[in-house]
Structure formats: C-alpha cells, structure tokens
Length: 404
Ligand SMILES: C[S@@+](CC[C@H](N)C(=O)[O-])C[C@H]1O[C@@H](n2cnc3c(N)ncnc32)[C@H](O)[C@@H]1O
Image (cartoon, rainbow, N blue to C red; front, side, top):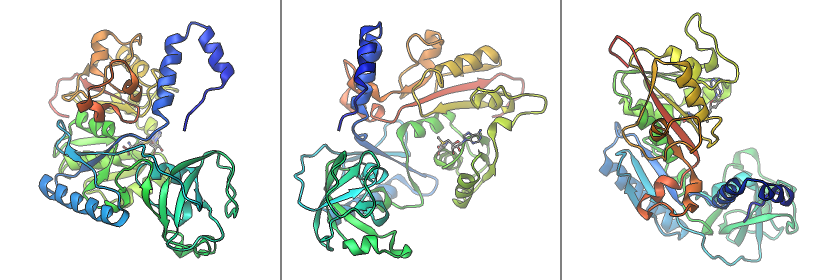
C-alpha cells in the first residue's frame, strides 16, 4: 500500500523552498503505510508479580499460536519501565492469495494488521459459496465503497491483509440475528503482518497501550496517597495507569466531556477513581478565565497546588499543539518550570520551534518519521521510536508549601 500526495501539490512544494519539508512528509507517508512493529502491554503491578504476568501471557500466546498456527512472539520487559512488556511483531510476509475473497471494512482491516481476527460485523462482502472451514483471502475496503452483502468480487481499491479460515458460511453472516453478530467469522492463519491478538489477552491486570502513553504517566510519577486530576480521561488508559502506580490508594479525579465515554470509563470501576462528565476547560479556580483556543494546560496550571506536577501530552506531532503550547504557557506562567522527566525516551522538541535549546531538551517528542532518518535509531531502541506520534512536557509549579 502507498499513500500518495496530489501530484500538483507535490510539484508546487518541490518548486518552492520546501525541500526539507517535502522530504520529511515523504518519510511520514512511508512509515504510515505499515503498522508499528511492536506491541506494548502495560501490567498493573499492584495486582500481579512480573513473573506471574509473564507466565500467563506466554501461556495465552502459546494457546493463540496453537489455534491459528501463527508462531508466538518474542517478548521482553522494557528496560526503563518495570510495568511494560514489549512484544516484537513480524511482517510484511509474502502470502499468496486464494480464490475466495472476503471483504472487511477499513476499521476491521486495520485491526487485522494489529493482530486481530475477524468478527461477523466487520464483513462487508463474501462469495455465495462461502462455507464454514473454507480458506479465504481477506481484503480491507480502502475507500469505504464496498456494498454490504455484495456477492461478486469487489473491484474497488482494496488492501490484502492475509489469509484465514472461515468459521461461518455466507448465510451465517448476512442472515445473522443480532446475538450472533459478535461471533468469530475468520480465524487469521496467514496474516501479512503478525501481531498478538489482544482480544485473547483479556486479563484484568493487562492493558494494551502505546509506549508513549505509558511514558507519559511515568513522567508524572504518581505515588500512593496523592491527588491527581486527569483532564481528558476517556477511554481511561492513562487514568487506569495513574491509579495502578498509586496502588489504588489516593484520589484520581477523571474529567471527560463526552457523557457516553465518561459512562464507559465509570463502568470500568477503577478503585480510587471518580469520573465526572465535565468540560475540563471550565474546571478553573474562582476568578480565572479560560482563554479560547488554548489547550487544557491553561486551566490546569491554575488548579495545580504549589510544588504540584503538571504533565501535558498530545498524540500529535504538530508544533502548534506541542512546542508552541509549551512556549505560550511558560511565557504566561512564570510560576511554572519546565523539567526533564526521569526517563527520556522521546527525542527533544522540534528544531526551530519557539523553545530554547535547553527547553527543547526537556520535552519528549515521539516521531515515527525518525525511523527513516539517516542515521536511523539503533536496533535496540527501535521499540522506543516505532510508536504513534506523541508529545510530552512536564512542569513543576513553584510555591511555598510542600505537596503534590
Ligand atoms: C485522546 S483522548 C484521551 C485519551 C486518554 N487520556 C487515555 O489515555 O486513554 C481525548 C479525550 O478527551 C476528551 N476531551 C476533549 N476535550 C475535553 C474537554 N474540554 N474536557 C474534558 N474532556 C475532553 C475527548 O472526549 C476524548 O475522550
């Protein structure tokens, strides 16, 4: 698969003074055409020991491997985080297609690239002859144009994601009653990209989470008994990590402006976590006012107590949402000091941003485009770079009193 820019736009950029920008854009487009080559699992070490967790995960991966025939995955503990297991994915494999084709929707296709099997609701089209036990080739509908229930081969743009064994007939899929809609439809036996199937690792003490999100909560470094405010909480990956590092002792207030997402988070029943449907930009101390267009670090600084720690993070790599927000906050709030996290995995800030060299060295920018830079990251560090795009900045508030 390749992502292509409009030829006219590209020619225009190349003809101008944008050579570096075009090169960097092309690097991103290459990286974005494949899934990350690592899966990271966060373990709530307040519930289980490292040895027990590792044993149970290995056992589950071996069971998956026996079912699907896909070999199990090399696994190691992240050297900086004792609650993070890293699994090495594989691919792209060269896989020959078979005659029967099953089309799946784009979201389902993307999940298959990250190790999932196919459930009935993801299927868009299948041949009329499809029977349980058939070998099938699975394609993702790239343009969302495949008609549900199509009986002929789809001829639009499609991405081959691998082969599998159908667990259902066509009638099972398209005449399905609502209760059977959740069933397994295709067990992937020859995926183009191989990764552990996360739905099969359903342990209460395990969360599949991107490495930068894990690094973000470690930068905050919450301790038992403290009080923490999570201002954009759902689906709750970081909230649950905060609660785990606090060993579920202390108080975590989780704000989420979407009622539906807040409800789901509340249903997780995390001990010590109070969930509120609330717009965090309105969570200001009396007398303070939100400035429109500013990110949540505006109000958060007001709410922070003296010596309190504020961690600002985004899952984007744009300077406008990252370095520029940090620079604005530092200019506006002399009581906030930018500090380096104890573990610095992400690279520093963008060159040429509004941050000084010293400030840049303290923020963490996770930028998958680095994978293709020259020289690239050392092979032992690939799992720290082959991640989603992310940004983390940590501040400490000045003050008289002790506390967090
Ligand atoms: C990227 S997700 C956050 C991921 C989350 N921190 C985690 O680690 O699982 C962003 C969430 O912030 C919520 N959100 C956006 N603006 C908000 C606001 N002003 N107040 C509260 N929540 C907000 C969105 O509804 C969405 O659920």
